[in-house]
Amino acid sequence: MKILTLNFLTCARKACKAEPAAFPLHPRDAELEIVEAELNTEFLRNVLPRVEWEALRVVTEELGLPSLPNVAPEPDAIFPAASTAAAATANETPANPAPTQLLQDLHHLLLETTILSGKLVCGNCGHEYAVKEGIANFLLPSHLV
Amino acid sequence: MLPTPSTSHVSFDNVYEPAEDSFLLLDTLSSPSETAFLHEKFNNSSADHSEETTQNSSVPLVLEVGTGSGVVLAFVAANANAILGRKDLLTLGTDINNFACRASAKTVQTAITEAPNISSHGYFLGVVNADLTSSIRPASVDILIFNPPYVPTAELPSLSLHDDYNRISYENKTTIFERDSHLLSLSYAGGVDGMEITNKLLEQLPDILQPERGVAYILLCAQNKPNEVKERVRLWGSSWAVKTVGYSGKQAGWEKLQVIRIWKKPSLGDKCPIAGKDPSV
Image 1 (cartoon, rainbow over the protein chains, first blue to last red):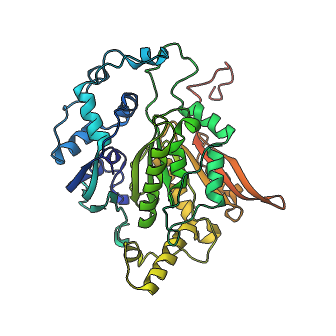
Image 2 (tube, rainbow over the protein chains, first blue to last red):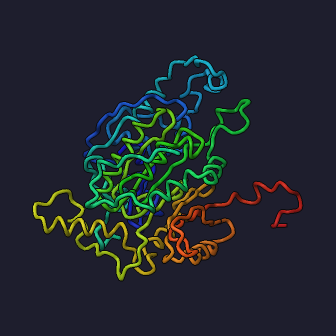
Image 3 (cartoon, rainbow over the protein chains, first blue to last red):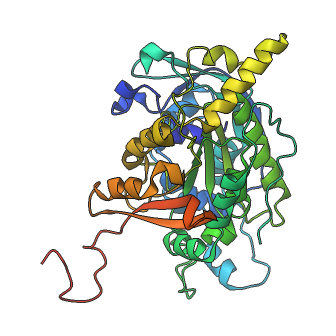
């Protein structure tokens, strides 16, 4: 599963659903794998509004990956100045400006970094969900459902 | 017609094999009326091409609950542009059956890799082994798709041995048979009226759908009493709408299977083009 996937997951226990501490789940003993993907500026531009920056920052730090800025950067700081708008309307080969370092870092973190195995721990109840071969198991024993 | 994703790698001994219900979902999601509806809701290159192409709406998240072979989620991921009118899409799946999780992850990945245009497919977040939407963050899902266990049965499969059955390998042939029967029963057995699992999902729906643009597609069979299901959804309040948007298997005037679409209507305060028609006045 991708790091970005954690942005959409929470503890499976009903009692934790409304608790802010149940999000994000905290990776522990994670074995990571890098799966290279083509940089897609447009995609990142549209995905970033959906990312909970603080949660992403915490997870990144817990995984021991290079730390992110404390506050979500403005789009101008991430995306190259010559906007894709000009390139999109001119139906010819767009003059692609070099991607910023921050854009490349976010691409690497969100889209290329995957959790192969380890645990995801709820910050509210402490329950540990195992990840094996990239698949997290959120099935609870019956007394916790 | 859009291509059906390959599921040739899937072992159908313990994962539901794509059948009439799966194909009805594919046909419905790619039908002219549904693509028109979804384009209007999610298309990010609006009719106004002049400028502002950078002011896109954020990437939609598609969640399939109970992916099984993964054929439906793979279809949406690989055909994002045709179905939604946008190339960027996030896809995520859940299934209670670990074998189905593995199978569907491969189905989606293969479909995306083989999609003819690399830039016109969804980004795959993975499949998690979970009960319905229990592990999904509230208010995050833009499009939810569910082909439920809809067959009426005397009781639901017992989950007491599920953890054991959910593991990957067994030596013993009898146990493998029991495991596979159990896992397959989870894909079809729906309890009373075939609705016990679907009712649980319906209960989760208002919390899990994105509050402004969330849409759900749920498959029902005639024994599920679809009209009663739709009536119940209407009781959620005036901000919700429900409609049958796909049918198959007409038998003596009765639709054997149908797909209902449940969605949040844009709030009337935002869009009321005709003056004097504001119902709140």
